[in-house]
Length: 156
Image (cartoon, rainbow, N blue to C red; front, side):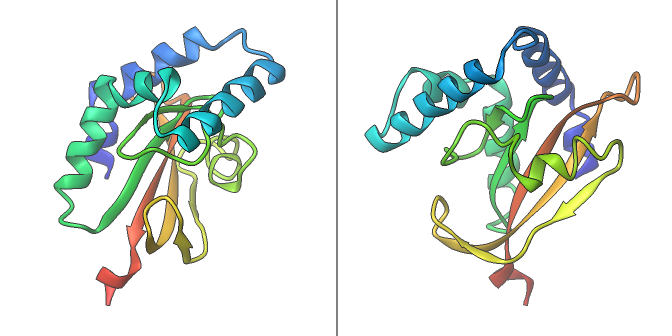
């Protein structure tokens, strides 16, 4: 996992979004999250389209495809818990209120959080989400986090 997480497309995408979203308030974040949820219900929209079309999402789709079904989903979050890129559409845009972000990004470099096995509505599979803090290799500063859905049925 570390190899593709330190890829320049990952690091630069997170840093660019951290800069872009530096001035967002919680109200702004909530508005974006509501827009995302509405777009998921309708099946498409501007915000989802922008995220799915970016180079990081293309990279993550390739990593998922290369896992031969082991990874059910992969998404990367910025320093506010907002999606930067993803292999598949998530049910919400803001992960910053969830354990997957709080127990990694806020915990610091090297932090890992493994959630409980559950049936995931977005992937329609039993999975465990494993989340890891992402650090900038140049500075060792934590800049984001990744969540990887692992198909537990393949672990037998």
